[in-house]
Length: 395
Image (cartoon, rainbow, N blue to C red):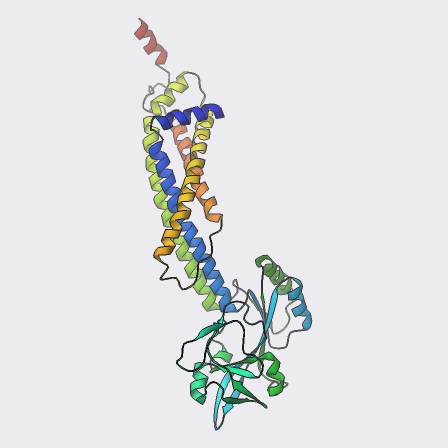
């Protein structure tokens, strides 16, 4: 059966009958996969940006200090860990004072994204790998303007005095919470004890940030969720802050709508090509039935033929779609503020499903045409007239 399907495929291809259908399949797969590959890259970039807004893959927040055992549990799963402590306090510079949202961070902060600092107000900023070193603080632009701070000035915070090391211009995981309404001040976590600001009853928010392998992060999230106690919470992309979750959901819906439009257009093109091909071959199908071929045999034969054609067209379409998505990315490169990761193989699997569905539809249409008593090339009585015609011709 497979050998006969190969022979029929070669015959129809040499006769030019399959070229229009094959071209429609290749174009359909290329249009679907090009959009799907590009959408997959955009989706990955959005997920990466969303992780940057969290500062890590998983964030544990509590109103009390985290036990060392929790940090050890994160490290034991191969994840990187960082700490951040947030509270409100008065910052003083000479005779001037300003309420500030203080954030004390560890050396590993941030795990996702980058901080940006500038040497002074209204000066170009640059990315930095970590937070402020010990003995220095980074006020944001609002605080620096309110206290008239410059690089190298002295700033008092609680019982300690620090040197202004830079002006903080971007903090990736900053959110609109109570601690972040006031001007911002970032310091090293190791200097926190010297300030004497944290006392019993102080309103302080403690955060543990974890990042690393995706599977390990999910495993840790599943492990820690039932172990959270009073005043403890977990943040990830699935239960992130509303502004992160809403933006990510809207972007994914838009990407899905774009891919759906490409699928619909491709399906219309394949359907038109299949309809033309089927009508041109109804007489041949009727003759094969008259010669003794059963409907089940014909369905198997043509399913094999179109499965081979669909596989070849899908491979060619996927390659064309993979190349086309680079062209799409080049056209919109000026609009993309972040680099796009390489696509995953998932869109290629979607491209292979499109020809398989089309092949199944074509085989089903042929089956209906063969079984229809009013199909072209077949008598209305359902009986084969090939023998009678041959007898008349010989007589």
